Image (cartoon, rainbow, N blue to C red; front, side):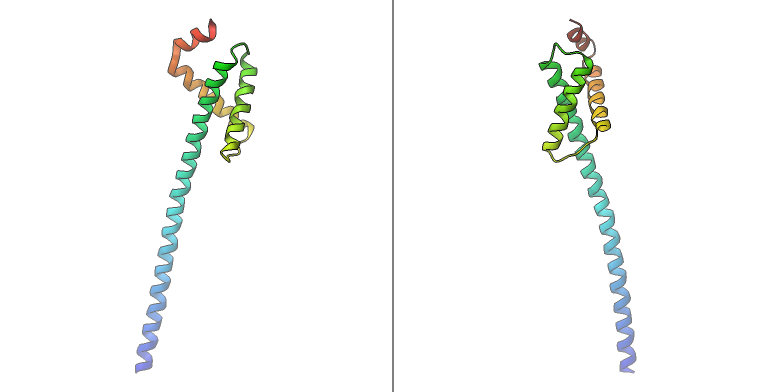
Length: 119
């Protein structure tokens, strides 16, 4: 009878440990998923901030350049700053970041932007 009780207790412990392990694994997967999303959000915010800095920098320093050359300079500057931060991005993402930053700044400064560019 004692052996039967010990066997039942051992089996219950195995089941409980297995269930506990499953819950821990599920919790860790959820937790890592949240942390992964937070990391992605932080990286995107950094990329967007650097893109705005790139556009502002190029607009301020290279007044004599035209649109395509300004874009090229902004893309190079942004790419270099992102590499310094350990982030690698492709040309399409760089273009999207620069264009988005330009649109944001134009929307933010409206008529003042047009006056600065035009005259």
